[in-house]
Length: 171
Image: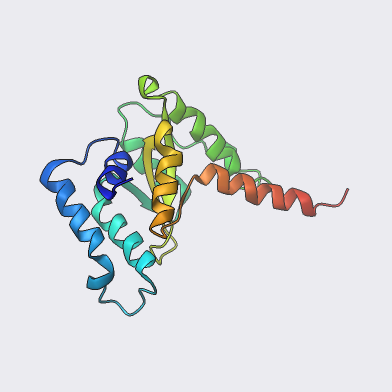
């Protein structure tokens, strides 16, 4: 998949024309232009530049309820953060991501629903998340991996964390 197609899919087709061309150029040149000494690899430079170039499409926060507010702002009508779902410390934030997955799947149904992905590598504690068409999720993750950039579904990640926790429980 070409970088232009990856960015198009990461923005649900919204990024196009000269803006898309400029983003492709900036990301392609990111390793050569990385002037921060804490940028540790080409993949890290790519991830940082993707986050920078797609900033207007990204919900970013280190707090889940603030991340949710940004996601909520992307839609005309979206439920408030369900605080009751994260009160159970034993299951952490997994119930929220399960609930959010259901909410996103109900939107853009003609496109197969939406999905939430996040980009790793910003060097901060922030979750840098994008809403994408569900049908494109696997291709986005795979294409980014070819660049060395880790993109994943938070739901999948937290299900894995919960499975590890459950496996360590006595009984």
